[in-house]
Figure 1: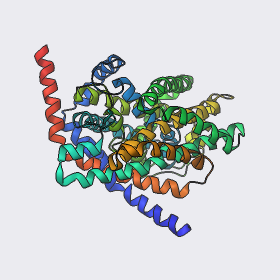
Figure 2: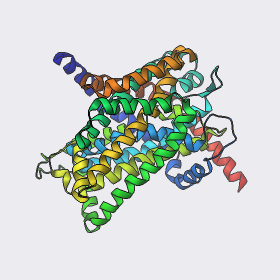
Figure 3: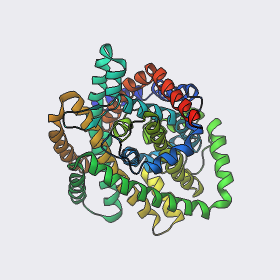
Figure 4: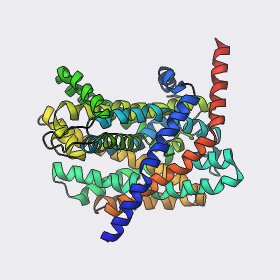
Length: 449
């Protein structure tokens, strides 16, 4: 078993090594420049579109607003709390800067993914709108690339069980057990039943729950974090100075923090930024393909807000709390570091904020990824696989909650990285379509003025 774990660790380190991180960041930089910084200039317009997208009578299954909330339900998870803390613990405060940079360029990646998802989506034999990388590879790149579409769907269908199911269930059970001493079995049962009520209702019910839970929990979490930041308002300039200085120079050992080189800050900042917002992995466009819209550019603009909200808002709040509280140099790591940071600044309730955030964010991740995995499985096996996949998904939740997941995590990590490769190839090859559709939309916009 130890030998297998060692082999998987080596494969994972190669999959998520410098080449992959350079590809993920590089495609974002390429698209940002190719779009002439369109994604930077249109953030406010996108927010207005999101507000207007709460209702739509266009063709599709869920509103544009619900599509973004479904995508966010899958991306806002343990990465926003434990992942940010891990980046800081291993890469120092400078990792936050590289996380920001990844998110800024990742907005263009997410925009392109959703644009292509709507442009090349299909309607299945049950009348549902389906799309994502497998469909824009099949319909955009056509014949000779069908194997690449199948590869993405295969990796996505199986990676979902790890990153979007068992790992999340395990995080919930661990957090609830640590704070409330509730046995994992009870947590597993409750989580499975709640998930069943939502998942068995299909995308409409998932979207409705996501549209209610995600904004509520995100606002509550940000409000608590902002309160802590305001308490330490005098230290805010020093915190930003520490982040910027540590991004370009070695972070010295302080307290329990063992120090970190610049490369560590870059590596963990980029990796955790990608893990958090999933720009480039190809997951979010599967949700956006179901949106009630006939405008790929508009849905792309709404989609890019996912990266903005996930990383530039929520992850930044977590990072600032960790740094301003002084907990970053404690030697703690992961969720324990985030918990310590909140508990230090909000004695008595800080730990509950972190645990509640973990539980809700992990639960919504289970819901969102169930849809992603289901659509990937449907691409491979047709609509007959939908109900068996949903039932298998529900069975995996208690297994994840009550098991040690070292091997599951490693396999899921590898498959998750493998998802990105077909998607990044497609984004590069279809970039002329992305640039052309965007230019047409801008031309039409100017024509109306």
